[in-house]
Length: 363
Image (cartoon, helix red, strand yellow):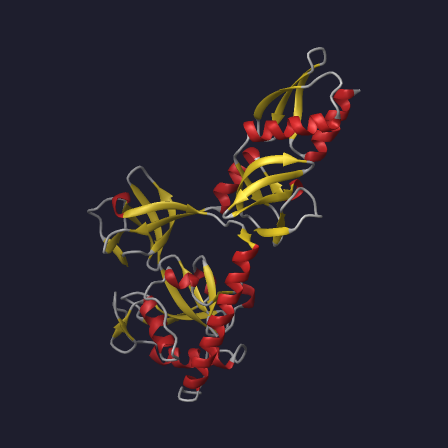
């Protein structure tokens, strides 16, 4: 009778499956979802509270691995194991945390700067979490040399595909013992591990205080940018482009009209001249400088400017960020960007011709 009750409790929690039970010794041999084994001792008259405490000990001592959120948007992290407790943060879809314990159908987790409880139904653990973490994590290579030569093959003698400045973060698409393949505007190329730092990026929870600070910062930046845009828009060309769109804000469309004047001008690595030559981040930086907005000369750094929007909400003037590259959305599923030395400043469609890492809105 007791063994059956335990099985129901564990199945409902989605945490353990019992492999065997020795009734005389009160010993339960358990297998944590994902194949991690554990064994706990229970008295013959153990209550459900005793079992729950034993489960928490088993999780804490046996499984302190990853958990991955499986939700449409986010799940609240609470200060205790029920919905009656205060919200202390948000665990976003596919964000990663570490399991610290288990209590009454809730996992205690740490993710980012947040420690609290989430309902077990919204996260996966064990082998499934380990596998999923590989899928949701993004392997990144940060350039540690002044100018990184990206090559066509995994040797330092092969031809150069493109150049990337120090500090840029590139998405890794393949890896060997000595080289990584990275994505740049010219295509996928190889670089020696000697010249990059490798990390895996995950989405982590955001505390209530962090969310409030982020929203306040984004609102302040938005107001400052709108004020600068209002001053510059009147002096900008009001002509539209054949690929442009009338949707979106007036300021965003003014950015597009100004940017599109320079299509056909050259691409020059490391430069910022809209007429004599510029690279991709220099192009975006110089266009927005015309509207009184200061942006960094780095495609990676531009993934943090302004505020983020989804691809489904993209509007003219938004900055579209890729691995080692960046452009400006002009409407009609098209960006304008300083592409490569062979093509110069041009239009490209669709926006998703490469994997989009972020869309940032300034106005």
